[in-house]
Length: 311
Ligand SMILES: CCCCCCCCCCC/C=C/C(=O)SCCNC(=O)CCNC(=O)[C@H](O)C(C)(C)COP(=O)(O)OP(=O)(O)OC[C@H]1O[C@@H](n2cnc3c(N)ncnc32)[C@H](O)[C@@H]1OP(=O)(O)O
Image (cartoon, rainbow, N blue to C red):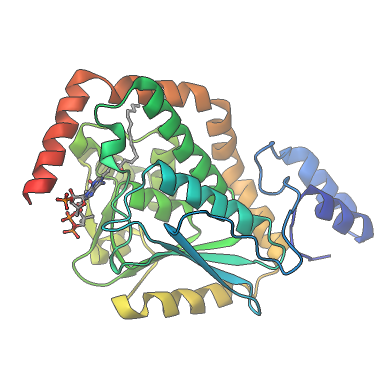
């Protein structure tokens, strides 16, 4: 019964041979997984289970065939900022791993230690046309839906700074291990005169609780690793050189839990937010487009860019 969750077809197969099939059938009927749901997609992996077709090398993927653990390394120097190409590569990588029946977990990390991800590429929202920023935002939404809604065990191995969009990626995972030391993590959007969207704010609330999230979001706080651990924003700290190993050990613990029960439990708790974004996708895009192209916001972004360059 507890076979991999590969897509709707294999779930149906599992249900039909299972004594407890009625229970699961009722579960899926009750939750009515939507069209983008990882649990609904049919797998398209190749015979050897590898289908990593990214045409660029901004995302590097390796998979241990025995354990089914894939490591996804962001490789967009100097700071892994999330530009359009990066968002597309990450999404396609997450989806390919999702559909790879031999994959059970993914570890998300940076190829370049000291910076996990600097967040959205600010240049992608600076003096760009409304249509361009709208398309950019949709790419972010789609990438997030594929990671947050993944059936896999997802672990962020945060081997460096993780502001804004870096924190978004981390929060979309199931568990976060961060490098000890001077590195920071948080949703600092308000410092750029930006407002984090509802779905991102909600993941912060879900992870650290209402009061702490409300405060952190309002002041755009960036926390050190120690403080992040204290708040529950990350789950574990490790010396930077050990973050990957600790993540692999942690994943192995998670993989002792039967995949199906774990994934269904995860989906049951994440489905409301996934559905809410799917429902309000166009409204969310419009808000982003209208807000970011406002002149006062463009001036704040320009000042922020100047501050970054002058650092
Ligand atoms: C309801 C209303 C809705 C309204 C609108 C909603 C919008 C909400 C968006 C919410 C989601 C997420 C938003 C974001 O992610 S915004 C990006 C925020 N990111 C940051 O603030 C991080 C900025 N970067 C840094 O702090 C440091 O670079 C970092 C600590 C990550 C690394 O430091 P390091 O010293 O190693 O590197 P440098 O600072 O020297 O940077 C090297 C070069 O890279 C450029 N850089 C850095 N970050 C970015 C970035 N995010 N985008 C573009 N470019 C970046 C930096 O300027 C350096 O460039 P040069 O070498 O040319 O000087």
